[in-house]
Picture: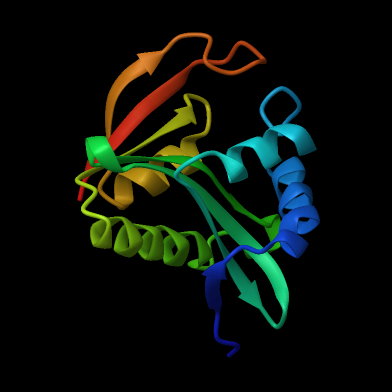
Length: 150
């Protein structure tokens, strides 16, 4: 079995990340190139990737708010062919290790209320639903705000 390499993203990874995001979400939810670049380059943003045999199969963008000791998952995307293989869990675990090193105490995210798979994934990893964010996405869908204490 091939070992997964978890590493920080570099500039040359951008096109692969964009393709994965576009394939992972419908229009109105997926980021376009400008939005993805914006989130990857924001102050406090970190992007980590899961690579198998030189190909990126998943990635996670988080935004760290060190002064508040919090962080937000901007997106966690896994190629459809590699979902339910543990890659998302590996990325989430590695992100939590990084955040713990930074002294972050709370990790949050927003997830579409219709995305049962993602909701269950995050619940399995210790996130709890805090509230509903009405009309959160550009397509009008609501989101749940979920939080995990680190």
